[in-house]
Amino acid sequence: MNIIKEIKLSYSKNGIENIKITDSNSAYQIFLDNWDMDTIELQEEFKVLLLNRANIILGIYNLSKGGVSGTMVDSKLLLASAIKANASSIIIAHNHPSGNLKPSECDKRLTKKIKEGAKLLDITLLDHLIVTKDGFYSFIDDDEL
Image 1 (tube, rainbow, N blue to C red):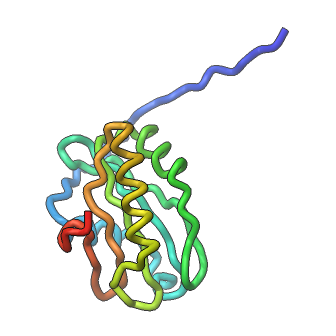
Image 2 (cartoon, rainbow, N blue to C red):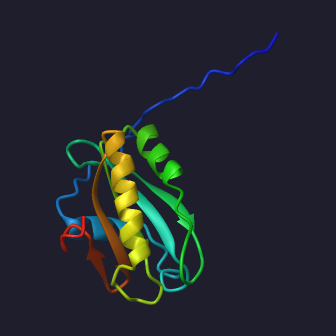
């Protein structure tokens, strides 16, 4: 007889403070607070901010770390983290170790892909930020989303 293990899901805020994201700057500050400033200019990382319907932070997911010029972004893992957190919306971010805030064509394609995939799951991609320790670029503020 084969026994199949049941998948268990649980949800707990464990007394975490309710922090609301109101604009791209507040999202940037949260990402920056959760970035290792010793490596922000060394290697590219990709993170996901998970939000409820009121734009209250549920959590942050460190999706990947890469090299100097890129990191692997698995959209399935990204969206799985949003589903597991019961997120209604997400904000994604990655850093450019070079300090250049201009999005690449690859950044634009990835944003479009994630936006379309999230939409199928009734999850809203609110923004995509490119962060450096000195500033940020917001896709939504620049009408790229």
